[in-house]
Length: 143
Image 1: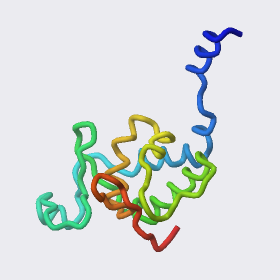
Image 2 (image 1 turned 30 degrees about the vertical axis):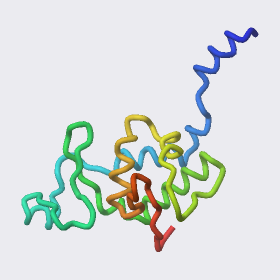
Image 3 (image 1 turned 60 degrees about the horizontal axis):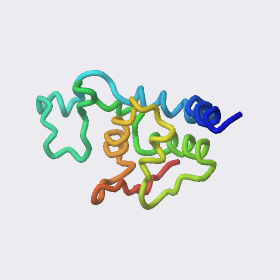
Image 4 (image 1 turned 30 degrees about the horizontal axis):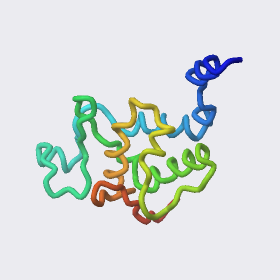
């Protein structure tokens, strides 16, 4: 096999870690973490969708379409549990529970169309806080 054959073969190699169950489950979870349309919770209905004063955003614009976070399955502890499992499976290392969350590493095991859902989910669930453009992991009571 010559050098050109090796390079071409590498283009079509799929990272087997992407098919591991926790990684697949995290992508499925990320896909289902948001519902179509703006939030219709009691607070949003009463305020006609004005989220001024909310600690965490409810409605997001993803691909030009309004979506809302599914509160029942996206608490910080839920997101952390799914992320920890996928992170460990993909990187073979424990997710650091404090400090900067390296979003580029998360994007390595998340399907590209789902990348734009990461920041809204992580921020709205309270898992991270944006500090000068970096996501700082916040202490979670459950894991």
